[in-house]
Length: 119
Length: 114
Image 1 (cartoon, each protein chain N blue to C red):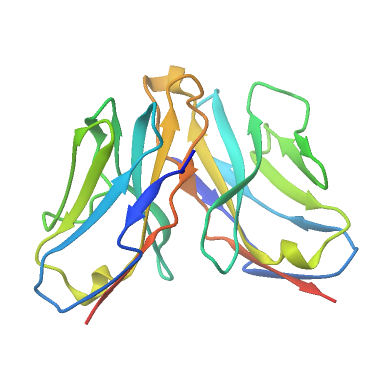
Image 2 (cartoon, one colour):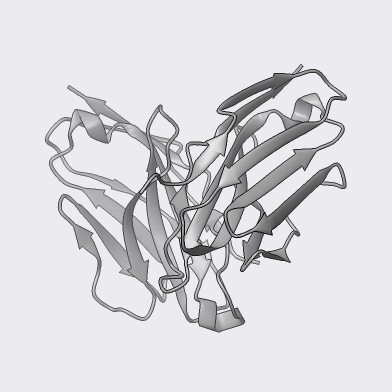
């Protein structure tokens, strides 16, 4: 079974600074997807960024970027120029590729990191 | 597009009562997922459907939980009888046929069992 581990229950960063959230995972699959989701107090789950395991290039979305190390099974999220609106719970998630086992598959989530932005 | 719709948004019930949570996926999506979020266990997958067929229900905690998807536009998650430990936020998510890596989450239903 796949597992996702987020070792930082809480992180704090000054506004406009850069912060990195850590995530490691365990899988025997070679093809899969990794995600970072943001959950603000409204509890809505918002997709921040996605990485396909077959791609060597790290995904970026504006101020958000990842450092994907497939051999190390590591998938960290870097938030640059932190803003007050970035304050939320951040969840790392794994999903195997549909062609690994047929059909869509559910997400396996880490326990989350609570990100605090200091003004 | 209206997004994934869940009802009710909040539910408070007494132990032993039957609870039914409802989900309307995004039109055209063929995958539907039910997740549960608690402080102790985090976010966990309960069950998912492809083309209205249940594929994996290994996450359903026990026989008190059941889920159905009678058609492509509606799914229910039922708890009978409910217990205080079922208190959680229940999310429904749907995914499109052509982009299986995508999942769109509903706003969740906060269930409190007293």
